[in-house]
Length: 375
Image 1 (cartoon, rainbow, N blue to C red):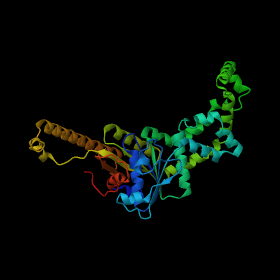
Image 2 (cartoon, one colour; image 1 turned 135 degrees about the vertical axis):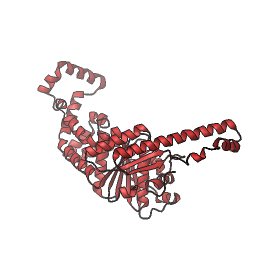
Image 3 (cartoon, rainbow, N blue to C red; image 1 turned 90 degrees about the horizontal axis):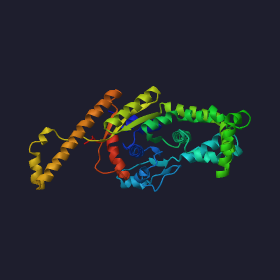
Image 4 (spheres, rainbow, N blue to C red; image 1 turned 90 degrees about the vertical axis):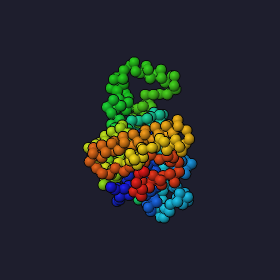
């Protein structure tokens, strides 16, 4: 069975996707840290708003530009990074959208008109697919700069993560939508379609809010319409990058039924989209202990050790519950392997402590990079 280092050999982009609550952000950080410890210059990008990533990397905060993790933290964690470097950033979709507008605007005046437009400021974070699209834009931008050996992208939960595969098309469709063309220089036919009643509503809104809504909408969509070609061309290049053999998608899931179903579903979508699938990482696996020989005399041994029959019984019950979970996890992982027709399924056991620092990430790495067997 391959480990993460083998899966990412010759790759420049690793995209981690999966359902929520399965340790995807932590796994992304662990992969990045592990590759940095092996001499690579690595950057991990997340669009997860949680602060877990910054905390685990010893950073006070993450922003829309990369920040380097202090190499001294590697030494404190008992790892020598050598020539490797670890960088991290948390995507700010609004800031990235502003940067994209700046790139696609034909001139400074057009750029400023959009950035200062009240409609743009309100919806630039809310446009359908904008966050996913901006993640792809930032990934593409950093990749083009060729400053890193590997980029690791943490994505939203999987059914939403599928949105980033389609986000460029949906965003350009929004801008090009026929109904929105009515707002571009809304006079003549456009105003006749909107009708007198709509004009009255806009007049009332202007008195109440102080905003000339129809004018702001017209200005926004007129300015954006001039950038559709740029968005479309860039989207094509982003899609080509996702399908490039140097990119690898790793699906992260938990061992319970629903996360396993999500992983199978996402794998199917990747295959349909002809995107490079690398493998699956199953987190928080309950690993079966010794066999049935431990059952004989266990309750009596516990009672003798603890000195409390009731507590000994509850400990035994908890142990039996754990073994039931281990049996369930083993069946689910076997089903996952069959569904994917792949042996590239890496298991990380359920850890007794939460991961809150670089040392914790390297404990996960001991399983991701095949130094240890789940136990």
